[in-house]
Image (cartoon, rainbow, N blue to C red; front, side, top):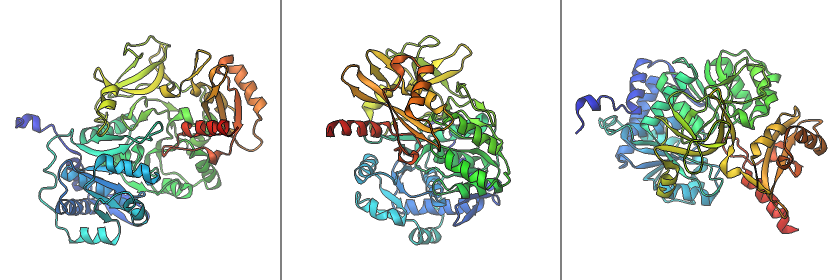
Length: 511
């Protein structure tokens, strides 16, 4: 048994939520277009749902799978699981059947909570007992009496709370286990790093199986703000929400800005207040950053985080409203320690690309059932992210690229992100991705896929731009134009480069 003085510091997420719910029982906690729940309402439903889970035999450490679009029940499941020590596996409803089967089999859930329109997809790949959202879930919750065990079953903040799946761009998805400790620390990091007020709300339009929505929705509930649940990118509804709620972080993913900017220009509703907007500035055309921030009159978050790390490690910088950035150097976030290292784990000098390694309280607890990967990625007390950065003399860092995206052409290292930044700087380019292609002479060569707006540049103009800003060996050997909507994307809006590379390889096979 731990001494009482030590146990007093081991808070869990449910207990903090319960305290917040008692403190602001009449404040609006969540709305999703179907219902509005105050904190008092939410706590009541969470406690009843926790009792339902316990009655169905769910024990601490057991996994509850959820397959659902964004709706208030998603938060209820996560908070109820927190109260009984269960772990919620947040399944991606966009996955192909084999991928979905892998994600379910990996974590071996004892129960699944499934939205009716996704029930057939779940049952096609798993025999796990299901509780269906809608009348079945509501009837079970209404009939349940709170179980006194709720809130007493988590004795260690290192206990897992959610499993969020990585994108699996080089194989099947991995399940990142995120603890009570990490979720609480992420909530505190959000509040401190973004200067959020307790009542600042959050618009959860990105899928809840993605870290940005689950992380920040839980963080918002722990502070006492309102979570507005929206099922996917719906610019009109998002624009309306901005006129009704004060928002802390208005998330905008790569690939989403163009549609929201168009809505905002067509319907410039008054905005109640936004602390910061955007995300992942490296993947967004600089002119779109200026347009979005100008329309919202709020700074852009020059962020760099991950499912595994939360908001840190590089999210302490903002781009002023209306400014087209000419550099995207990042400042290291508070509450984390960062090193840039070579393949032998030696720190690299300033100006030399090195893999970012990080440690801190927001860090995840490893990949589920992946001992070899964990042994490789967690070395010398740090988590190695696989992302390359250069440190500047002023302490800021510049994103170079994912290490796995490196193109070796004629013995030279080419980082696709360097080429993409040049292409995205053109005012009529709306997206660009550079991938590797087999080259008989050089081994590999870069090929650029580009989407343009109206009256966009031709290949010659873009190649001239590259000649002006890039060394010869870094220039793309070919520019391919495709519609913006044809870019294959992950749930976070990132272009899936492996799909583009497959397109090129398939063409060569056919010829």
